[in-house]
Image (cartoon, rainbow over all chains, first blue to last red; front, side, top):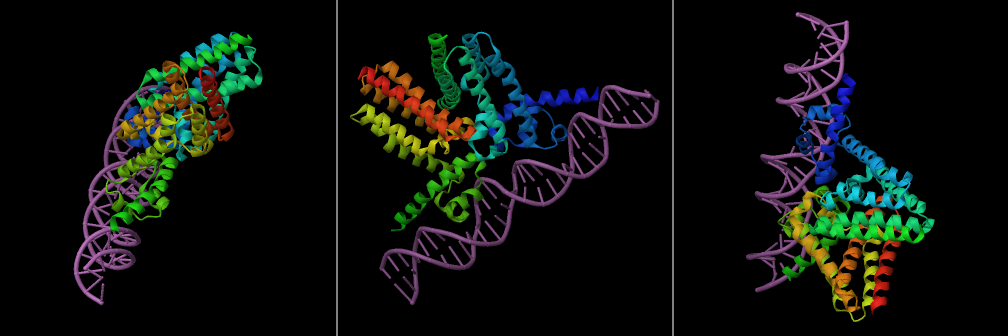
Length: 193
Length: 193
DNA sequence: GTTCGCATGTACCTATCGGTACAATCTTTT
DNA sequence: AAAAGATTGTACCGATAGGTACATGCGAAC
């Protein structure tokens, strides 16, 4: 029972940690911040994450990766209906990033030097996303080279939409950009599929 | 003479400050970092920027804004040849951001809460960029609504390309994405112009 | 009900943070 | 060359950073 309970509590702290890292970045999130965000004291935090902030971020990345793998990557890779999978991806992503109000932790990590520790995970996350989307497009009869190009463009475009929407404080711009990307992909599938 | 010399030295420190902020972010850049980056001691730094880090970042933003206004915004707004202006913009931006190796300080500021102090400048920067590009497209006979959409997409796309290129550690992806964006804009101008 | 072991809050550690004070130095003006 | 002012390095400040130590708490197992 102990093991399960410990794991549960550790696991249940991760979303709060993720939100704190999202809001303040890795360097900007202090232990006090993380403690307040999770409702756990320093003692508990270091009990669950002996490696400190770094291990917390590691756990957050793991958690994010797990969510994306299940909700986004897997359907793209193994879905039977490419167009539906693309549509679902954009819907889920829009909800996940709250139309750009919510920042992409992984993308942010890549931007400044504090994230170099996590460089491999950051790279893998984006590589897998692009690859999954390209695979989906190929399943929609889009030629491989074009599929890869479009996938890259879409993933990059989503990140850009987050940056822009945050900067302008305007969710509508996120919606417009993502809508456009979706149309491009669906049109292409429609043209070849 | 005193004023000129002081101004000169202050001014010449700004690029180094910008680079440090780029690399480490606002919170991540410590005074020790900034001191080393500029070669100036704390004394000199606070002599030139009595307001501390905040004033330094303010100066950096001012400087960036000045550069963009001159090199990017103004040609877009007042250039006689829209297609040439668009081409020049993408060339200059690619060089400026070193194909995505270099991060956009302004975009990064918008992403985490430490940048809230500079929210207005961040917003204005992107708003002006989009507006300038849209104006250029309109000069190329692109209908206003479409011009605005495309401009938004392009600016957002560039930011996304930076995020992705940094994350993947791959300049080529930046090049590909930006190339695509440029083609889209030029094609549209060609269709209407 | 006592023991056992994880969970937790508190106190504390050192290093470093952003920032200030100021004496020493260097420039410039006269 | 001497006065005046700008420029700089150094020492220092309180606050807080991330992290550790540990005594206490508390629930499960026997």
